[in-house]
Image (cartoon, rainbow, N blue to C red; front, side, top):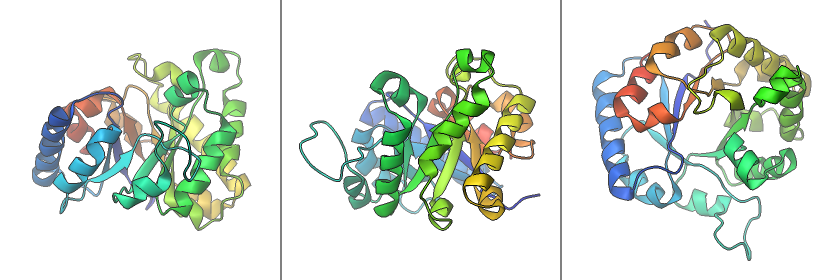
Length: 253
């Protein structure tokens, strides 16, 4: 059994008003405190407007909170954007970088992700860096190469900085579609990711980094995924909007 961190992370995406978010956070906290007996770490990524309120609401609980995105610039004339320093100033623990929806709809690139990762780490944030291939890329057997290119964003980081990075493998074809990569398919890619990290850094960094699986994770498939050698948790979308499903997934380690 490896000693990597086991993580259940919930990405709320653009869901929940502030009042609804407070209700969901309360339910998650209550269930976690009464039911969670393993050492799983819980992180939630609500919308920006929730962050300050939920940070206060979750004080004293082990639940950590992060932002779904940030800008790579430290400050400036970037209307509508949020900087790493702003997130640090309100006590954020984490930031999601490179989610497939950001890449798909907002033209984020591996280069812009690399800039964001560097700025986030410099401001004391931990990073959950998302990588994954489309169905077309998998069908063209380009999936390993796509992942290798996305992991190039980590180049230039030190081994100690990598301790503040969590990777999340999300096959784009399995996000929100109800289709899940089989546990074996997911684990094969997680092993490949670990090999690439070993090449970029060293074996110790590769064995230490937690790699989450994202893509239609539910309570009924979580145990099978978490039983694999190289899957250390999940970045959960739809099921994270149900406190019952989210905690049941966290209990599956």
